[in-house]
Image 1 (cartoon, rainbow, N blue to C red):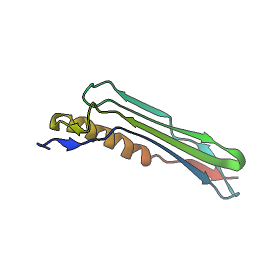
Image 2: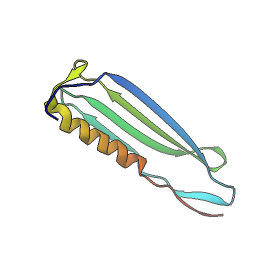
Image 3: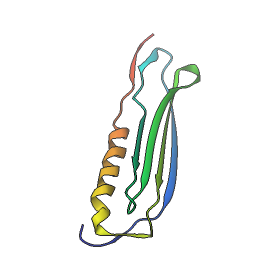
Length: 101
């Protein structure tokens, strides 16, 4: 990217609930993740956590706090933004381990 781009400050929280069939139970959850960037041009925080809920459910929670200095980011910050997007994509590829009861 060679041109400045729009990058608005935002906070996004996402919670997903997964209910497995009664014949299955969770044997392992993905590891929690937390990534902080202290780059003053493109500060962000991303975290994800996975917990067991009631009745064998799994709760996945992701929080992204993105707070650039302005509404337009310089092209030099684009590699840092791509790194953040890759981390978020990796988190969505996490898998639950489960087995029959």
